[in-house]
Image 1 (cartoon, rainbow, N blue to C red):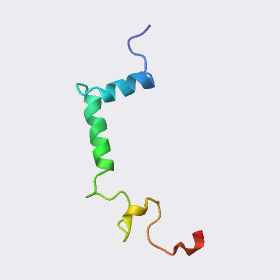
Image 2 (cartoon, one colour):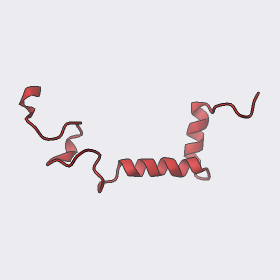
Image 3 (cartoon, rainbow, N blue to C red):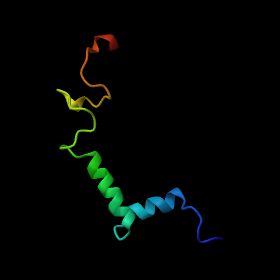
Amino acid sequence: MSKHKTPSPNDQRSNTKNPERPEHKSAQDNRSNQMNPNRPPNAPSHMPSHGGGTTGGDDSSKR
């Protein structure tokens, strides 16, 4: 076996779950950036808690 093989998904998950690995910190940073309430994921709208990908507009066409 070669030492330079690509890591399996299990290896990648183990690396992100191990707090002594640099991959753990980058995974934590990514999660905190996604869930940061001060940085909305989409353009600001009047109700960002709906979870959809659309912002504003008339929703009567979806009914």
